[in-house]
Length: 234
Image 1 (spheres, one colour):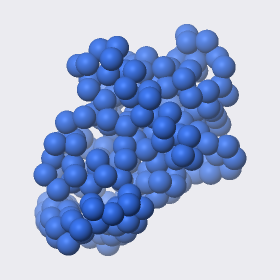
Image 2 (cartoon, rainbow, N blue to C red):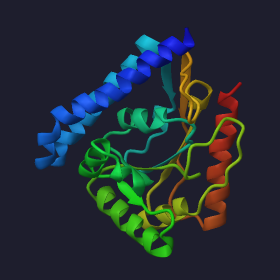
Image 3 (cartoon, helix red, strand yellow):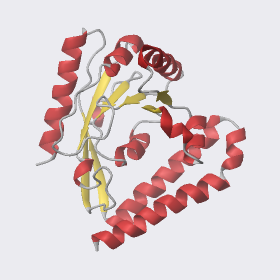
């Protein structure tokens, strides 16, 4: 049953990308707001399909911890799920993502148009500078910046170091960082065809204020995210 439900969902996922992408191609010639609207509509469809077809729901806790001002969101990354759902939790975010995604047919065109923060992970200091400049531009326009501080999807139980790029963004933008913990990897593991029924828990943690020095910030961020994420696995 898990295989069949996963198969139906994966077909819906791919088919919807192709269908909505092709029908929405004219929007690429207009302002980004049109593409952002279609993005959110498609994500709501996919999240709904997960619930109906797979039986996979989600709960968001800690919304009261969100600051009134703009923010940087540093999220645990266990699954493709959060790359979708975070758009519905944080209004019109700009996500820091690998530059290679922009080369994908159809999907990459829309990612580029909607405005994200691409980074060339092999580009060294020049790539970091470009990432910060793009993040500053989108932040100045009022969009929250989302970063996955471990830089990649991390399987449940895996230990992957936190990259210093998150501190560079934190220092440059001078904004509070909202840590986000989750347990999506229990239900939609990385590089897995199967999706399991259940309830994904996402926890918004009390923000880290701007102005901390590097080691204190990095240690505090990792402790907050890792401790809460482990608690969500039990």
